Amino acid sequence: MIVRSVTVGPFGANCYLLACPQTGEAALIDPGGDPVAIMGLVARTGARVRFIINTHAHVDHVGANADVKRLTGASILIHEADAPLLTNPVRNLSLLSPVTSRPASADRTLSDGEEIEVGTLRLKVLHTPGHTPGGICLHVGGLLFSGDTLFAGSVGRTDFPGGSMERLLESIRVKLSPLDDATRVLPGHGPATTIGAERSRNPYWGQATARGEGEAPGGGVSQD
Image (cartoon, rainbow, N blue to C red; front, side, top):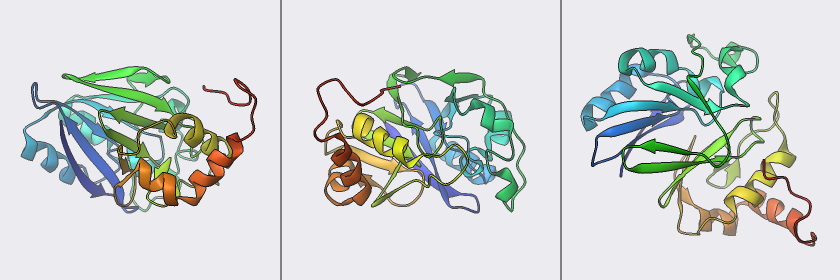
């Protein structure tokens, strides 16, 4: 697979291009701003962008949706719980951004466990609420696009509308903890990391796994 990235917008979000080398089909993950820079990245790879996938609906991850969709014809995909936020400037934090962005509605909503086909690649949707109600991670091969669920040494904020630290820690324990230590994590902000590195050093990971200790088999966790 081909993976390229560019840091965009006033909040320094990571936008990723994931392309299938066999077919040239691609997905843009979190085009949060600077559409010219994003389209330059696309042009350099020669990829055909089929999907725009948002890991959640905050403006720093969706701010260039409308422009990129216009330029590529790609469909916008987002988890069903965050789809209403795309056109709500209060809940998607557009009012806090120094850059004006045009809203764009979802063309398709996602649910936990489904797979998105990008050429021969299969991206599995992991619903990881906590930063937002519809936050997701995308797992493909040995890569995890973690959005604002997991960062190197930290996690996403939970003090915005719809955020919940309890749900975020549950998402880490139930959805991310089972992943192999060698899984490379490409977050929504900051440097790449691995599941193993976060398992060993991230204090929030320790909090998340500690909550699961002592539970009766099959009890205590909702895998929605």
